[in-house]
Image 1 (cartoon, helix red, strand yellow):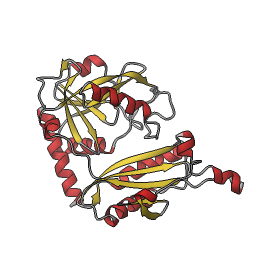
Image 2 (cartoon, helix red, strand yellow):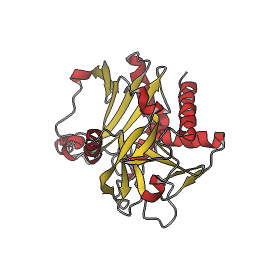
Image 3 (cartoon, helix red, strand yellow):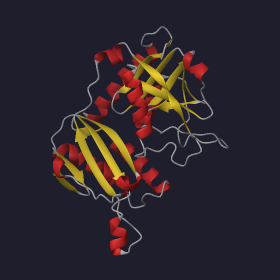
Length: 295
């Protein structure tokens, strides 16, 4: 298996970056996790456009371009002859030691594309649904990093470890104002009286709002497109814990599992405690969409 590092393919074990890389020294960087099926990266440019926009907004780099990054991911899949894969694109602030050595102000970002076999989830996750926990921490919507996929994932991984210890499939985060935001590695959807409700994501927030903490997920966007075609009513709004716990259905989305049904929040059963009709319908529609676009 070879990875793509700064424009070249190298063996995985030989892929190295400087100890003075901004990602290593300061955690400065962004990443995307993509799904490859049928030797094709699903919606690669949607992922790379989001990363490039974040890189510009957060002053990481103005030199990145979405199309070449998407092409590099696709080339990495084809180069390794993988029919299915989990594709991770990581971009950091680059080798800081070069700034001093060359007395330059601009440092080229470090770009790494790594491929792994797709994560295999138990069938029961999708047939029976999962239980989720509530994260102890709270997200700050006033942070300039809110709603961006930065390398600072330790709080979320730490929370996921606690969720796994409780035999939960995910943990849900609320904001400092006690409004539902997202999962550790997912977007969240709530079905209330036949309407699909979801928190505002970055770029969707109302005028004069405090600001979103939610990443505009690629799978989230695909589900919203599918809802329009299926005639499912969508409502972007703020949601509190009472609305979450009284929901008819809850499901989570990300590029790895697609649509994941939630049947309980800790000890509280969601709806009937079984996978809901809308959730099952959207999961099948998402699977069909991926197959169509990658075949």
